[in-house]
Image: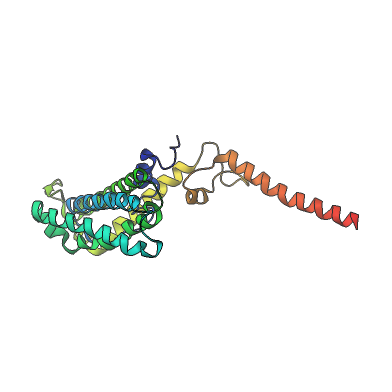
Amino acid sequence: MRLKKDTPAERILNGIYNENPVFCLILGMCPTLATTTSALNGVGMGLSTTIILTLAELIISLLRKIIPDRMRMPAYIVVIASFVTMVDFLMEGFTPGLYKSLGIYIPLIVVNCIIMGRAEAYAGKMKPVSAFFDGLGMGLGFTIALFLLGSVREIIGAGTWFGMKITPVSYVPVNIFVLAPGAFLVLGFLVAVMNRLKIGAGRRPGVDPAQGNMCGDCMSCMKLGLCTGREACTENAAVKEAVPADAAAKNNEGKEGV
């Protein structure tokens, strides 16, 4: 079932699955790779980014008709930096351990391309409710991605999960997974899994991609964010075949008239 565009449910699903900022758009790689040495760090970074992204999109959408076009980027940075400062102070006061683990990456949320990108591409053009849920969906998608990445790295690389020992005593942790190379390996694996899920969901029963003008060109459909199906694909092929035929017929009529 397709959700109506720009509704709260559609925006949340879009951020979590259709346009996941990490697995689909490949954005925010600096904090994604650097802070996911554990599941706790990943969740902390993801939730702090979610709060900032949601509130920033809401305020930017409310001010979209007031901010002059030539001042968009400076205004967006001021709004985002304000919320980053508040979250930074709150984490330092209430979660000092997590704050120390994340370090410089909390202030660097100001220049996170996910937040700047959504502010420019969506919040600055849409109504506040849609912008709010777009930020929430993108933030949740980012949090889930960091949680999965941090969990896999922590379990394989340290034998723990949220600091608790969950592997057998005989298990020898693979330390490379808590280092930079492990981050790239796990990210590549999870991106491949997401691509496989999306391509598989785009295929329809009874369709053979090897046959001419049939559905199966899933990568083309994914660019649009939906699956057109066999029927639409066949109709498009018929239209493409009809256009050259009509053009040829008109050319022949023109020659006969001469």
